[in-house]
Image 1 (cartoon, rainbow, N blue to C red):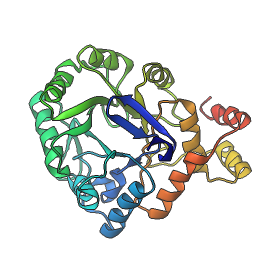
Image 2 (image 1 turned 30 degrees about the vertical axis):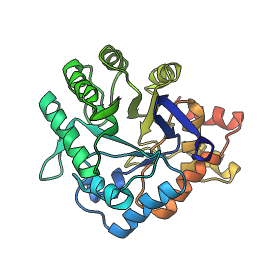
Image 3 (image 1 turned 180 degrees about the vertical axis):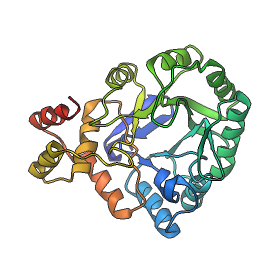
Length: 288
């Protein structure tokens, strides 16, 4: 199966083989990741096409919508194809106004896991990431009690593997003393290189590193250097930025999000783009 996966495959744990080019479902919700999608049929079509084109790694969470995205995934794909892995997150809830409210009490983390199970229609979740820190700002707060609560659910069979989101190296080390960590999901892209050392640490330990906002986020990457490399290679700047990430580390897995079938095809095509050494050198200069 792995040779047909876009971007190739990564196996960070027994029973978990991810397509390195995955799909992030966040943008299927309405504006501000809140409420229903603008076009429900298009959202369902994007999910089905992603799987049809070989994606075996979908990133989601019950706080997208909230609930909306998980219910779309269930409607589009359940019963889930063999080998498809859903990676979800806990650690926040949404206010009635769409606000993001950190929720890291151990009992509520367990409740969030059960809600994800219910809305996705699963008996066990493939991977649950503990979301720590603020929106794009990591915190060095201890996470032992929170991670231990998820580790209990792993022992109970409700979770197969555990990960972290928006975490620091120290938090990774703290979590690893409690249970294995198979994924780290942090803000990282061509222009945001603060986690370079953590990316390398994950590669050394065969931990999947999933950059969120790989294309810059709500403010897309803007760079004359990126545009120039893309023009020379006959690709879009977005494809070049994704290809750079795939070549940055062998354990990087991508989860670019879109609510458009056309953009989904464009993103997946980046898995076939091989950047020459001089292009990578130019792109590396963006962060510097």
